[in-house]
Image (tube, rainbow, N blue to C red; front, top):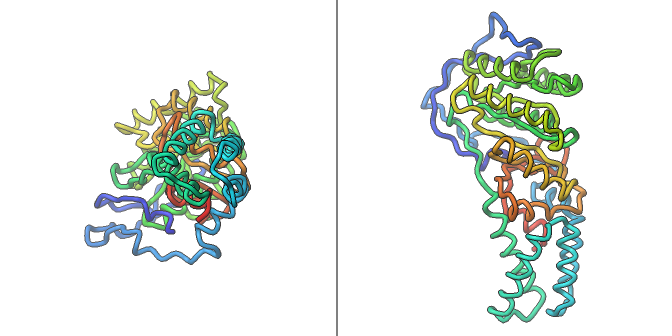
Length: 353
């Protein structure tokens, strides 16, 4: 699956854009090189982009990544009788997968009703019914990520330290660049030198401009980045922010400040406020979604590190408690291991064919 196969683009005719070069200061290079401007006769269509075929298909990698969660659920239906014991084991398995009490009760109640109404008599039919119910529960989280609505589109990326936030920014930037988008990155995590350095490496490796300051106010870096993005005609400005624990209220207030300043830099910005969460953290991930959504009004989620976790059911908990769209899921370190979230594919990987 192509990274942007679920992205929609409205036709835009961007101004002549500078070829990005890595920058270490908040001031743009004085003599940037230029590339020919795109015209309406040169649409940015993902289908025109050729990417090397990944070693394993996305579904194969997704199934492998979710195998720990899947094995705990799928084994229940092997030669099982449709009785109270099955429902109790399924309840325990869903809770162990961090689906949460609310989603687990919802799914079990709906499943029992469906088994009764449809007179389901064998385990395979009950498993199919559970797949349908889980897909319907997760479907509201599936939403295409739309490019081309603003020039530039400003994205603010948040998340706690260790969630894979900076790496995710690098992956998204590389994919956007591959698909014809001119990207500018802002190293707004001014408190952690490693985060700035990591983002600079991504920029240098992929010839993407990075606005960075060794120290200073994160909001000022974000503001400078938006102004630079507007001046140079970039399509996307992505702003990294310092890792935050939602319990650190004074730090959450600073994130709100960055968000406000982005709006002053460009009307309506940030156009996307994304939270990167570690799928291994289970119910703690749900707590993060609640806290960051309350503070920043999230527009989307990126769930990373689903490979090797037994907690893949956390998406069901999110769907029931705080249904913020899940734009992307990640099951590995490679660029192709971050893909758009598709509910049916996710459930197939979770419960098998």
